[in-house]
Amino acid sequence: MRNAGKGMNCGMRIRCSFSLLLCAALIALPFAAPAEEQVQQNADERFTSNVRALLYADVQYPAHSSQNPDNAFLHLYRYSGTLELQPDLFYDGNLVSALFKPRFTSSSRWWEDGVAKGEQNNLSRAFVNEWRVQAMPLSSIFVTFGKEKLLWGPSFLASPSNILFKDTEKVNPMTEVEGKYLARVMYLPTAALTLQAITETQKDDTMPQVNDNPIRTIKADWVGATAAVSLIGYFKHEDRFRFGSYGQVTASDALVLYYDGIVSLETDVLYPVLDPASPLGGTFAKKYDGSGRPFATVTAGGAYTFLGGSTLSMEFLYNGQGYNDATATDYYRLRQNAANHFFDDGAMSGLSRKTLGESLNTGSPFLRRYYLMGQYQVREIKDVLDIMVRYIYGIEERAGQASTILEWRLSDRVQFFNINIVGIKGGKDTEFNAILARSFMAGIEVHF
Image 1 (cartoon, rainbow, N blue to C red):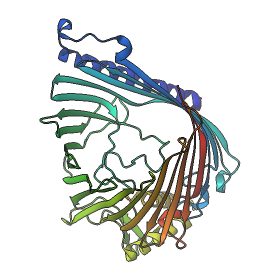
Image 2 (cartoon, rainbow, N blue to C red; image 1 turned 135 degrees about the vertical axis):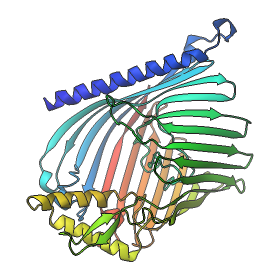
Image 3 (cartoon, rainbow, N blue to C red; image 1 turned 90 degrees about the vertical axis):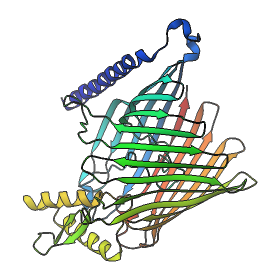
Image 4 (cartoon, rainbow, N blue to C red; image 1 turned 45 degrees about the vertical axis):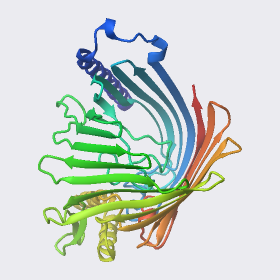
């Protein structure tokens, strides 16, 4: 019955997405010009598609940390095998364009760690990752509505200026970010300048993911011959204003410099607050909410391309909302106390679970303040092989994470990929060994 319920929910989500797509198309119809004024297009040119299938296996080793006592909190599997079907469908008309990206996944998982050892399950899911309808009422104005993902910025480590989507899809390029329901209006006053108004859309109570307090965004993008700059302002009812920006400049034929950052007054990040009256010795609280204190998060870096075609990238991240040494010590102590009482009975167990949930997601992109990243990438080795090696280093904890990404084109349509991530410990408690100690993924990607 549980699997049947999941299937019904998937079916409802697909039907809802189809209905929204139809409604958006009907809304866009008034913008269409009379048929006799339109340039006739061949139907085959209007509709295009790309279908990608992924078949892969992954192995992950849960870290033995206080964040996940005996693997009972996060319930992380050890092995999995997954098949994904990812059709991308496009329509490109004279005045109206659209895309539709349904997703179908099926996976089997096995558990070998902690209290979940010996468990196994099979999970299938069907959903729409993105759909979008875009109309052009005037030659310089575009109106867009749908479920889409907006990823931007040149940084690899993080894109602080984008609070709509935290993941850049660069750590693991085989993992997609799921879209959000957005409405956009784009105005192109010149070839170099684009202005956008973006809002998360509200939905009625009959729809999932009701959003009663959407983020509204104003974005300006300027592109010059050797430089580009974007400015972003975020507004939310009864919430603070945030200002973000990113850009890059071509310093020479081989060197590109870039940045990506955001600043806001106050922050919603959770900080540990010691409290002797608390059963766990403290709580997490929004310590600087209402303080009027400014906070900034910025990445700055550069990429140098050698004559042979390989590229070396370096980035520095400053996370103003991150913990200093004293706050980090309190954080790890509070997390450990929560782990010690996780298996207690009654209210104590519930309090421990709540505290571990807050320690897992404090609201900050990184736990501490200062990070370095180095990345070396070689493309088109023998015209078939791409290799990337990356290392992220937390300066304060003296710990890091190493990763490699390999892509090998077996034919025009088939590609082998391998992604490996290993945490490099600097001490007993570090950010990079809180969840996974290491993980490995390998599979085949096929394009039809």
